[in-house]
Every structure is written in C-alpha cells, then in structure tokens.
Image 1 (cartoon, rainbow, N blue to C red):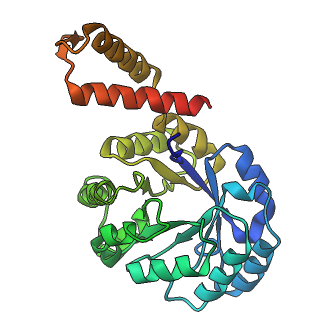
Image 2: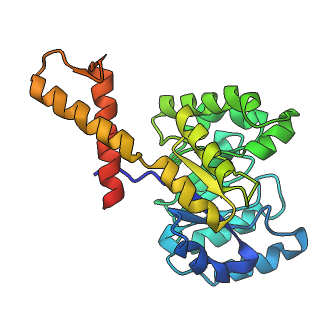
Amino acid sequence: MQELICRTYLFVPATRTDRVAKALAAAPDAVIVDLEDAVAPGEKRSAREAAARGFPNADSVFIRVNGPETEWFEEDLKLCSALDVLGVVVPKAETPEQMRHVGSRLKPESILLPLVETARGYENAGRLCAVLGVQRLVFGSIDFQLDLGISGDREELLYFRSGIVLASKLAGVQPPVDGVTVDIENVERVRDDALYAKRLGFGGKLCIHPKQIAPVNECFNPSSGEITWAQRVVDAAGAAKGGAVQVDGKMVDRPVLIKAQEILLEAARRKT
C-alpha cells in the first residue's frame, strides 16, 4: 500500500496544548504543535514544558521547533526526542547538515519536514530532500517573501513554487506542502489558494484555523468530475485491449491513462 500523503496540517500553539484534541476533531491529516512563531520569546520555556506533558493522538502530531540559529533549538530537539510524535518541522531549513543534525537527535522513525523560507533554503532544496528522514518540503511562503523582498504571493512566487515541486520530484519525495492563507474568514480565498497549489503540483497545505481544513481537504481530493472522467478513461482503455481509443474526442495515450489510474487510486485511498 502506498504511503498516505497528508493534505492538511493545522497549527496549534504549544502554549495551548489543550487545543490539540479540538484541532484533531476538525479532521486535519496532521496537527503541528508550534514552538516557534506562535510562542513569544519569554514563553518558550513554559511552552516546552507544556508540550512535554504529551498530547492525545500523538501519532498525528508534528512539533515545529525553533530555528537552527536560535538559542532554543537544541532544547526543542531534546524535547522532541522524548515524545512519541510523527516528527519535526524545521523552520529556516537551509543546509543538509542542519537536517542531518536534527535527524541524529530524534527517534529513527521520525519524519523530517524542512520549511523552505529563505533564498539559501530554496537553493539547497534538492539537497534537503536527500537527507534521510525527510518526507517532503514545506514552503514557508510568507517568510520567503520577506527574505527576498517580494511583494505578492501568486505570479511573484510562481517560479519558486514550481522549483520546489521540481526539486521534490527529482529527489523522489512526496509532493511539497504550500504555505498558509492568512485570510481566515475568506473560505473562497482558502479554496482558491489550495486549488492553485494543486495545479502547480503541491500535495498539501498548511492551515492556521480549523475552518480552513474542510475546503483544503476537498481541494486536494479528486473531485467527482475527475473520478468520473478517470473511470471512463480506464474503462475505455481496458475495452480497447491496447488499441487506440478516444474519450471526449481526445486520444487516450499512456500518460493520460496513467493520470486516470492515479486519480482512481487516490480516490480509493481517501475512502479507507
């Protein structure tokens, strides 16, 4: 059976670990307990102590540690090594050496998710993917804009989003995860951002509010129209027994058939 690709990751502040159960009830594929941006400098220690008490359903939880250049990084890794969580999200990930160090401090089965948030991280994206334990890249689009002095998050970031998708494919890791949509109330904007990321080849999205989960999950699942089309393609190809075939007036060649089979496989996964 193929590995499930998470569509949604919902952030919860490490200062409010009591919210983890409620966050999981919103049905994200994973929760990220955040020790970094959601925690003020003066609360880092107390947040770590709260996280040390553990979480319900820890097998669906990641920890976002503070960045490798911060004073809190090593203590965060020590905490993560003692918890039975899925793995660690590493902000400002820039070098494979950083990621190998993180991996060396954790349980062997821990999943590593590097956050590409800087020019240097982007330049080394392929090398980050090659580190043992790295499952996929995560695009920290807001911090990335800040680092490069970019204004705008669509065509202004198209080159970089496509580059991250390409690096992921070449490295053989899961499709990357797109960054957050900060407009919490605008569900249509969340949906539009998720569909845009999907068209570019992303496989999931970071979320900052439970109400974002359902539309993002929906967008990254095959639609009913896609499933119907895919079944017709597979049926037509099967009936042709290797011969030329058309569906909706379009030739069904090998890439089209493979795409249809992938859609049906993904739809079957989501039912299990």
